[in-house]
Length: 146
Length: 127
Image (tube, rainbow over all chains, first blue to last red):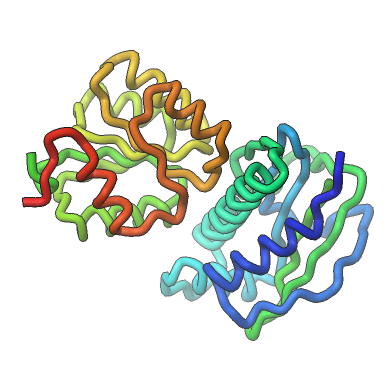
């Protein structure tokens, strides 16, 4: 399967600037074998392109991210924050697979976002990238395993 | 029928998407709006409430929007289902139309897109 990390990152940065905060700056990716314990907000892409995607950050950073994305007033980290982060991931991944379909004629679909830590380990694919994005309010790490 | 007289059912597992859609529908003039959050609930709510139009997401827990569209349209061939989804690929669009959807809006849908989708319904007017 052809890697699509560059396309994924380009779409991600476009969507972050459009829906969250224009201060987003992408730092260089790193390749990992395992994910940290606080990485559970995730979503699988499947079909013509298969990948595992996720978002993690410190709780106060996720809270600020969710507030900026939703335009809601959110004071503390709770289930609503996770739901909103899952919503952004779903929106971004959806727009990514539309781009994939339009530009490369690859048809993929999405599973429902996972908002709680699952009992079993995530299925990681060949290469797992951490994609750190710096905002004024902290660093949000995106995960792409493809 | 005027937009303000429409009974609207919206179904999306995303709280934010439901709020955004409800806000847009209210701006368009809709007053009677029912919210549910998964495809099975949409089918049950459709049968119970018989709305004039249904807005459905695709990626949802319990039952996805394409399956819900199919079951709603089997129950009522005149049902007017509009899909509002982030996964607007050609395949998903084809599946939705094949299931009986009348329209497909890519998320995030604007208020004017929502209003136009309502005005595209047969017999619906702004005033």
